Image (cartoon, rainbow, N blue to C red; front, side):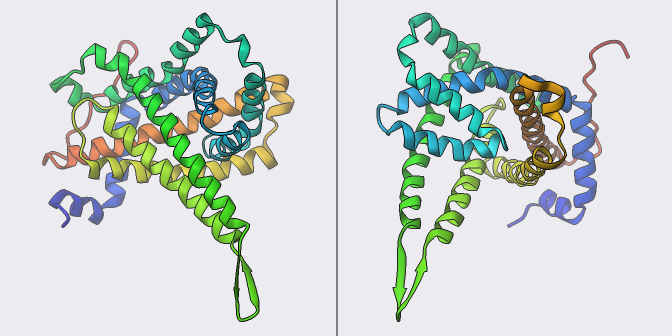
Amino acid sequence: MLTDHATEVLKHPGAFALRTLKAFRANQGLLLAGAIAYYALLSTVPLLILTVIGLSHVISENELLQTLGRYLEWLLPGQSHAIVAELANFLAHREVIGWVLLATMLFFSSLAFTVLENAMSVIFHHRVAIRRRHFLVSAVMPYVYILFLAFGLLLATLVAGSLQAMGQEQVEFLGHSWSLGGVSGVLLYLLGFAGEIFMLTSVYLVMPVGRLSLQHALLGAVTAALLWELSRHVLVWYFATLSQISTVYGSLTTAIAVLLSLEVAATLLLLGAQVIAEYERSGTGAPDARPQPFTTGRG
């Protein structure tokens, strides 16, 4: 059953969206997204290297890289092949990894989570004012989350392998044959989209200080996932047709394209969080209370 403020939001979605965008702007959302994108760029490759090295003891490297490339395309449209090629090259020379390099990768792989937690504290500043998270929890949380991401990738690889095997089968009935390849493709897409919503929901449940309801986390996750689905198709089209990025940046093309994709993804991630925060605020009975803008200097 819908609550009163949920009914109010459904009656006036435009007003709710406008309040959310104004609050996002007041919280310097684009500036925070830029910081997340920069540190995510530093963290992505070390995180993937650690994950692939760990899972390669359980699953064959080719199958693991194939699945990783498929779902990296959701996060980095048009750039997954370059990342997977670097991962494959690193795996071929894994013997060069020493304790110092391992510790360095562990450190850099956690940077994006730390910055994301700080950005969430700005979006949910009303929660931080009430309750602060212990610093040890903040220090350990990125590595626990990395383990869960590795476990999720393991499950996705196993399920994707089963769906691909199903796609090679045929159904025969009354002398006619139908390939299951199309069904397999649809199921793989739905698996990726469901995994995207699950990952976003987990971020909204874990990163903000205090306990967030599952319903609110799903609201933000579905909003961010739908916006990202639209955005990533636009990015694929842009890189394939209009972009002159390779002409301008040359050998830096991949890094710039990845950074741009991460910037858009981070913006939508924080926008989903802002939807949750605004929805919570609308339930307090004071929808007209405006958030105080965060500034970087005087005035």
